[in-house]
Length: 465
Image (cartoon, rainbow, N blue to C red; front, side, top):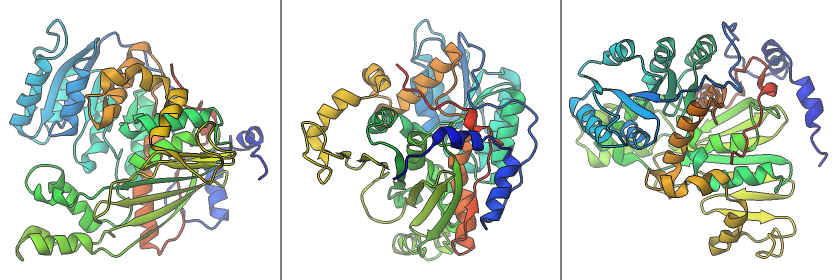
């Protein structure tokens, strides 16, 4: 295969965002969005002024938000200043956790806001935190992140960033205008295998990257038991009325950073998407709930499995799948294929042309299982080596803790974040684009260029020491 001429491509790709729209139109792809003018400054490698103490507020502490609070409160140079949730018991529970964490009793006099759906707005106005962590239902992510930035705080948002293209543009514009970070907290980018694969890709171990596979296949029908409070109480409605890949970022985030998408080399271009019939949720409801139960009054439209294929500007491909219904083992696929070999997940495996030294004789066999210890010893990401013991109790095998640690470290040192606002928006855009493609029989959809043609200016994510 002819090696990609990156320098020539980067020179060509510094065109305006309007030029990308023209290119997509000529290729026959659907154009579902225009590019609004920017009112601020590009945030690709933005480093905010240093914060000696990170004063953090939390919106939504029913599950994920509480876990983030618990770990952040143990870090030096942090202060939990306010908590907002619909439910008083959640707020008081996590306030008590914060007060017992950290040295010098620094998490005291925490502002408690609960009972009304707009209490979080009052919290932002009264407390004026430096950062806000948002872990609420999907439809609240965008308005809460936008308001937080407008009130002078950096916003850290659970996945996905938003559910509509228009909301994603508003997030980008607000971040650029206010010069505040808005980071989608894709914790999987901090998993051990994902960090090692990133390190190996940066070192050129698998050569020029050609193809990746990403997924979130996780049977979660049990969440339908959460009918008044909890994830299932609102997420089930999304499954019923939306048909596409509603949760793409856990698998997509890591492979996008392996490929440097929206960072110097390449960017998302188009997507096609198809869904299977919607059978699993309907049959589960019929089997487990009475005929007059509210779940049996829903007409589930979302296919049990969605398969999408992304084409990049350089012509590389990414398979993205999503299924939270079918009875099968968990996987994120986490595969990246290059001209010299392939890295794959679930289970973690490595195949290299000529074999993995000291382990396999050729690329027809995987290095896996106990043999991987030799690879981890050689290619473990320095960040994982540094933080594993400190963060391993934080959840999801330590990836949550590494993420929160890095957020705090970057804010305190005035460094660019590991995930910028454009990456969060591009990864999240798969959901509405896949819905549009499915509705149009698999018609190609063009990705918005949230960077307005400036992605070639953003440095690749570094292998931080």
